Image 1 (spheres, rainbow, N blue to C red):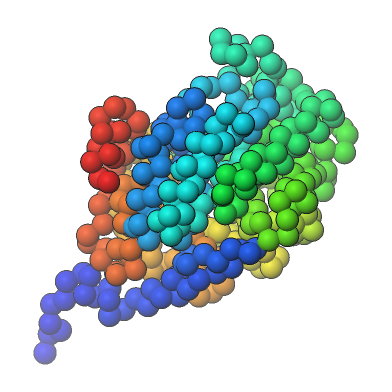
Image 2 (cartoon, rainbow, N blue to C red; image 1 turned 180 degrees about the vertical axis):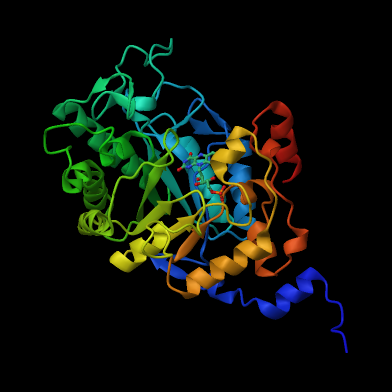
Length: 394
Ligand SMILES: Cc1cc2nc3c(=O)[nH]c(=O)nc-3n(C[C@H](O)[C@H](O)[C@H](O)COP(=O)(O)O)c2cc1C
């Protein structure tokens, strides 16, 4: 007898046990209801550094749609070298009230939100006309990428001031009601420029060939936040091997170096590691099928967030470069569950797919893969018509 025809969703219900990804997890003193995260994604919906009503509604809508944790878009810390673009989010005395309202809306919906603290470092635009344009662009060694000079190397005093600005950003976030913070040390920005030997040519204790020196500033920032915000305040640290300017880059060449880096961050008080990759299933080193997140889990007991093209067949940079992705939610979720049951990660970030469908998480929970609105490149654009389209989805 041929098997009766089952719709795709029916097959999914029979074969997939999704519940493990919907078990709560504790990060520091905060309980998250499930394992799904909306990762930091700049949407262009801040005004003078503070979130607009549209951005607040965008976050609130994703909480209503089931996501367990929102990490805000990257928010520049209050240091004149952090960014000079008016269009980016900022956290300072002027904008903290606006962030407080946004956080409160998310929490009223029953959600959790971390603010992502960020400094552009050497990729900051030099020579603009804004109020901070007179301030130099700072980085470990005056490099935006391995062979691209921009600005100059920060002095020890400037490094101390930047560290303090990160800590102050976390204090402001906590006072504004945020459930935690994420220190952005990924994708080629300032703290990643410290981590990566190609952009960190310093000869002092913050640089050089030894990862223990290159991780010093990120670890000092985590330790400073821990001391200022208390033992239970969750601190995630996001790092990546890849950079927007170099996909083959590595901040750590070997598992042993990764183990050293993680041990230092753990001693500093980090609560979670967000291991940013473009495809969550790719092996980090040829000796094993483990992803970067999987290696972090193997080499430390810090909770780990994985990320990268969940449910899509193109990665984020391909999307930025113009390739239209195809959805493959069932395949992605199946692989995610396989790796989760193998202990490769504790949480998972889903970026572009949640831009496209605010109810992505609850539809996945119900195994309604066919009802998910597929991501299109145009969803990332931030023109007036896209803003209107997002507003219509509320
Ligand atoms: C429009 C857009 C903006 C982004 N902005 C940020 C950001 O502010 N901070 C950050 O850490 N990553 C940022 N990212 C990267 C995402 O957090 C995520 O790592 C990436 O999209 C991969 O996840 P995905 O394949 O599920 O989309 C951004 C991605 C997109 C698409």
